[in-house]
Length: 181
Image (cartoon, rainbow, N blue to C red; front, side, top):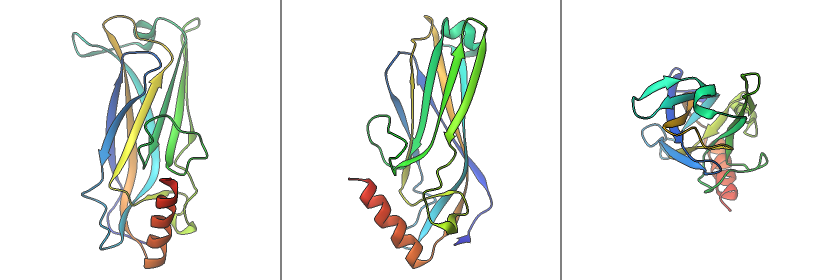
């Protein structure tokens, strides 16, 4: 595995305005992944950031104001679109996290439980190699925000473009194909 670029960041945001409704957005990797050159993305780190927004003025507000009660928000980053939140043993899962907001004492706990996964080859050095041309960020909230507010979930991905050996590329391609089933 040879690095073709230095580290750079990709970001994407999804907006939650209804409880128990998964919201998904796509991160296009087509400019970075090149199958002919056995080129992929090495995901080093994934951060999930939660903010609250007043929709009418497009300004930030506090989570306490926007949520109005105890809330859990779940986040996932996958390299295949499953159409729903996936379990931790799904090979498509790149990273996931949860925000627990306690309205009673106005506390928040944001944790990542897979950051990114380490299911890949040892050559990935603790990162996740993605050769698909898209990744998907998905989020869901246990509570509908107070009227006129939304929950903004941002995924921030630290990554680099890498060049893989023929064997590593084929192994990842086979793994990705198997995960698609």
